[in-house]
Amino acid sequence: MGRPVLSRAAFVEVAKGATDGGTRSATHVAERQAAAGEGVNKLVDPRSNCGLRISSSYKDPVKGGFQLRRGLAMPVEFRLDTTSSMQDNVDVAMRVLLRVYELLSTGKVPVLSRYDTQVCTSIFNDQADPHPLLRSEFELDERIAEQMSFMVPDRGGGDIPEDPQYGLFAAAYLTKTDIVRYGLLGYDFTITDAPGRMNVRQDMLVEIFGEDVFTKAEENGHQIARGNIPDCQEVAQALGKRAHAFVLQVDNRPDTNTFWSSVLGAERVVKISSSELLPQVVAAIVGLTEGVLSLSNLTEFLTKEAQLTARNAEDIKRAVAKIPIGAQTKFANFSKIPLAGTIFANKDDLWPVSDAVKPDKPGKPTKPTWL
Image 1 (cartoon, rainbow, N blue to C red):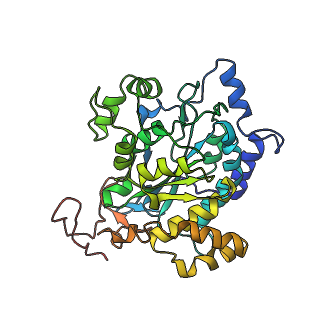
Image 2: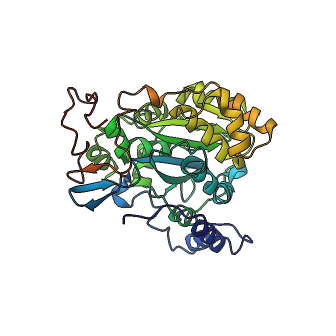
Image 3: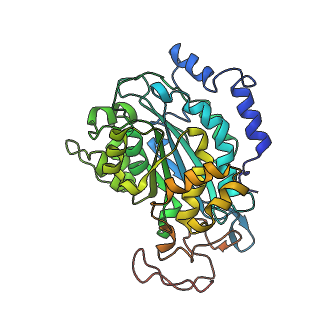
């Protein structure tokens, strides 16, 4: 019942088909179609699905109500720079994202084991390119790979800065997730080697998301007035109310670090040597944030479970040492959320049928009786 979880075999089969057995770019079909004027697949078009990307928990009908089969939906978004030197990021992601998912959700120490991990992948090109932003749906099976193959890296650039701000805008204002209803946050990762722009242009928002972008944002609970567009730093602050947001900086450029530190905070900028290390770095960040890992056992996790060399493990440990460790555990409902198998009276209910205690204040519910 319900939607299937990710199958390694199915993911590998989709990736193999997209790359013609590994001989071509995973996005070569989508790039050819876009060049021929056929547009992009609606599943990655920022205007599709009313502009929103939704991460919802799956509840199946059972006797007595609806059962939460796999835990609350935990949204994890990856925003890939596909300009110039980073133009192959989708191909890298196609190779490593399965391992990311497995480290988060399966294995001996799955750092998101009590949740239902759902992945959204987006790419950003230059704002002058034909496709400044493309963004998938939140998925939990081989459709993660399928929708990555629909991306169109414009592969241009060479100039600095880049334009991730529209992807951050989408994550902050055009995303609806169940997890925030419980006072917890999802995860958001931007992978880039360059600084972005602080300015968010109104005309670009309309071009990317459509004329009704501000109506869409308002319907999703965000008031953004024309002529008073938040800048990138303000967008990041809004995103911080929905997700633990990080930048994985794939270089040592000082201006890259300076920009992202000013936008997200220096503690959320993690330097990595290659996008190929995405699985291990993400698992480390999420595990530390969720309290599943600590700095004292991180090296063991990275060498044994994530299968890194001791040297690479120590490099990652140093890179993540200053993130807000345990940040998720500090929210009031962290230990109170419904787990897999819980029964709800109605599909849209927040708390299970056995919960007779109502929240005394919005965002600060008293402890449910079912715990």
